[in-house]
Amino acid sequence: MASIRKRKDGYTVEIRRKGFPHQREFFPTQLAAKRWSIKTEAAMDNGTWIDVQQQGTVYISDVLLRWQNYIHPNIKIFCESKLHSVAFLRREFAGVTLDQFTNELIMAYGKKRRKTVSKSTLNTELSYLAQCVDFSKTIFKIPLLANPVREIRSTMSQLNMIGSSVHLDRRLREGEYERLMAVPLTPWLKPVIDIAMFSAMRQGEIHALTWDDVDFKNNTIFIKDRKHPTKKIGNDQIIPMFPPVREAFLRAQDYTGVGRRVLHVREANSISDAFARVRKHAGIYDLRFHDLRHEAISLLFGKKWTIPQVAAVSGHNDWSQLKRYTQLKPGDLLDLY
Image (cartoon, rainbow, N blue to C red; front, side, top):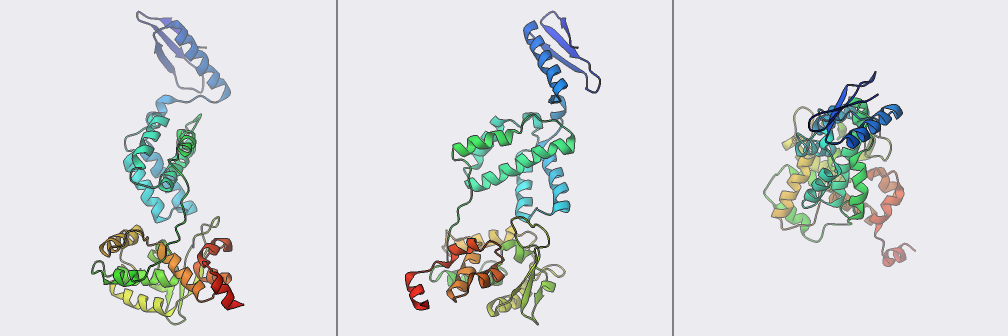
């Protein structure tokens, strides 16, 4: 039971219970002291008590790192873009402890971040933060009554600060390919552009390739762990290596990476970063590297390929996602009749 002692300028409350650390707090009034003791002991009784002092010794940056280190080798759901995001969040919240990680702090971060990133990017970052706070219960054995990130995300959604990504059906316009290829910067990127534009491979898939995955004899490419909504490991696929892709790989040998890696860049994001520089130099401002995948898929549909045939190259498991790539016109259907 709590003991309350009167002091010269207020009241001191102490709670000593087996299985709990010694609790001692000071209050200016007896009423406030009683309310705190009743609330604290009730939480101890029903298993919802939180050691605030312990939260003050746990840093968000440490939780993020330990969450990443636990998840990454065991479940392998961390692609390089996620690793990049977690590294950014660790720097952004350096020095912030769990007890300081409040709704107000997260909202302030969201308002600041939205000035430079999209709603979907902020939403993804908040998702990582929410998961790591939940995970702190397991890592640090801290009983948390609530997750402030999950509490504030609904408010941010209502304020239109966060949301899902929007599919932008962007194809190369006339002359843009030639303008990209004419830029003298980063020559290693040119074969990568061709690989993406004629194979429909994603940035991370291209970056992960080794020369052992490129079979010049059988004209095939082995892609490990392709993106899948539920299957994170073992979703491997062999796709055909079309002539433009084969020629691009031969050119890429001039810029090969360390060991057996096809590319010399350390991170997958380096590809999109280099593409952004080349695109800007070419005077193109609304084209993403990922749009090259859309271009590749659209080209296959332009050759009258069926959805199953295109999926065998693109790796789509949900064929309905390919409907937006078809862009069929009435005239196309008349030609097929």
